[in-house]
Length: 306
Image (cartoon, rainbow, N blue to C red):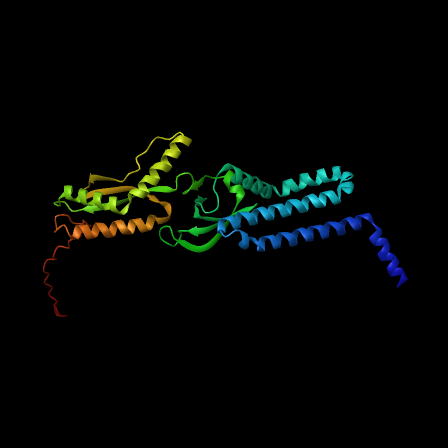
């Protein structure tokens, strides 16, 4: 028993062991403080966005504080290991080059304005809303795939941050949180095309409110002042082309990226209602296949004797 106590005493007297114990205790205390701070956030920060960013900051400060603590505790031991650490760092950098590229991507995302949480983006053919930006990966709530239009599929997609250096990043809601969209309306030949145009112009003006158009105009002015881009038309427009089968009207308008599908539904519904009240002066065209009546065939069947 005395030998065991003596061995434990010698072991605890080792400065490296004391340093290790101090580092473990310090990291544990920092971890506990970080968790308590995260749990207390709802009391002081009612907004979900504020809590999200506060959690990110607390996590970063916890990692940074732990790193500083470990470096301070082992500063005397690390001095004699500089050469070994340099060689090991080169090997680690080669083995973890994708991880390092992801960290660099996180820095670029944070300070380069590629996207932020809440934005709708397309990364490598994957569309979705950004729900988290980590040091190594960006997390998306996926849109599209087997689901029509801009609806969630329910799948969570995680993409390495290094992706921003390898392929284009499409942001649907960055500096200009609107999209140009359009629908095509085929109208039968013989319909009153002037009346059809008036109906379509009235419908798009009613569905796409003046408030939305004014917001889009203000946002586009900001784009013009920030980038080298022309002052494009933002208010709704109706155009006509003639095809072999019908008169094709195209309605072009600006819409908030979150309600693109809903706006199309409202437009189509109102157009159909207005055409029904036009007393057949304007009718929707469609491809019609007319089957010509087949001629009468008379078949005579002969018996075995011919």
